[in-house]
Amino acid sequence: MDSPLTRKLQSFVRLSETDRLWLADALGPARRIGARSDIVAETQDPRAVNVILEGWACRYKQFADGRRQIVSILLPGDACDPHVFLLKEMDHAIGALSPVTLTQIPDAVFQRLMGRSPGLEEAFQREALAAVAIQREWTVSLGRRSAIERLAHLFCELHRRLLAVGLADAAGCPMPLTQLDLADALGQTSVHINRTLQELRGSGMITLRSRHLTIHDHDGLQRLAIFDPVYLHFTRPAGKAEPAAS
Amino acid sequence: MDSPLTRKLQSFVRLSETDRLWLADALGPARRIGARSDIVAETQDPRAVNVILEGWACRYKQFADGRRQIVSILLPGDACDPHVFLLKEMDHAIGALSPVTLTQIPDAVFQRLMGRSPGLEEAFQREALAAVAIQREWTVSLGRRSAIERLAHLFCELHRRLLAVGLADAAGCPMPLTQLDLADALGQTSVHINRTLQELRGSGMITLRSRHLTIHDHDGLQRLAIFDPVYLHFTRPAGKAEPAAS
DNA sequence: CGTTCGCTTGATACCGCTCAAACTGCGTGG
DNA sequence: CCACGCAGTTTGAGCGGTATCAAGCGAACG
Image (cartoon, rainbow over the protein chains, first blue to last red):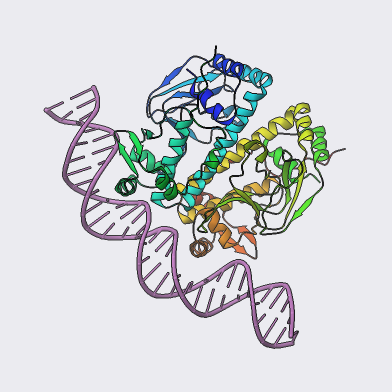
């Protein structure tokens, strides 16, 4: 079974069998982090690439007066590095939204991998560019989308991203976020999220119950959200896992 | 006289004299783009790094119904690449906010530079990370800052960034943005920007006249904006140009 | 079995939007 | 030199979307 990282990179570039084997070998031991706790890279190798294997996390910033903004949501297969080794100072926090399992690729291993495999190198480059494209789209959402459009857009995005790592099916996906999490991600209050959610449910396009999202009307939801998946830059069909190697 | 690119990179890393010379040599001929027109990389080398020498530009997205969001503002020294060569599809537009002069570093030259100079390589890496940190901070602004806080924050940010490339002094900086540009950057309407601007002026902290911003009360403005310059990751004192080479 | 966390609902206030009109400065052409 | 047009700014009136404050509810959990 491929790791979520392998699956995700395959959404950008087709990886050869050896690429996939090398990548699997590069992953270190798993670490577990409790829900609602911060992920601090207290690792001995601050340059290592940290990757989420299971669970959801987020990057966020918080003001002294308590206002909090989630600036990105990190799913399995996503890198969750603060890049402290290059930037010296951490400018945001990373928190677990649910119990999270992490692994890491030591810096030396990562460098060797990049040198050896042009395929992996391109995949990681595209992954990084896609991450900032997502950040741009969030800027658009917060700036120009209405409450219901924002919510719909976030659901569309998360569903697609989960699909890419094999954690969703066509019908829906897990949705561990509380209404307060959604509020902090979408720049609103949880009270208003609640009302917007009722409106969305009322439209019949989705069901959200017991931490699971079901999408009944993909087209409708995407139209409402003004969702154009191009910004995710998944150039290869999602979720099509190659048969496991050898 | 150093190019804005050199100045900006020096805000991250001290460059040796040879680094600066190599960098200056790498720059291609200048191209001019009219204000309000889109910058399309119709260049023969789509992988080349395009850099702004003069003028302001922006990345933006626009909906079919006309809503427009500026997702980042590009100043002299900033790279303005769509990365189409890696991402296949353009997911946003780049427009000139004022007349812009561009140059480019051909891909081959850039690669050679990265291989030769670890200093330049680190500088460009930090530059890229700082750019996404700025994008994150915009997400925070749009999500959690009030109208007046947003405006104040944008002014603080632009002033610092211009300072870093030697285009501002302690008192203030050029501000070619129209109120409509500000509105599209801050996710509001130009009418409201106008009123917020009056409030800011009324506080006595700034003057904004004939495309020039003067900041009378830096501390007050930064406090109002909840501005913490850490996210810009300028680790070296701004604007301290080294004496010209040779 | 009590406590906590997350969700829901209601009443009210206000921030920012919409629509509309007028004003200003400036470049252009008659 | 003046008339005009245009882009950008300013102002006003009214509305609507979202926040705020507060209370109650249900289910999970120790």
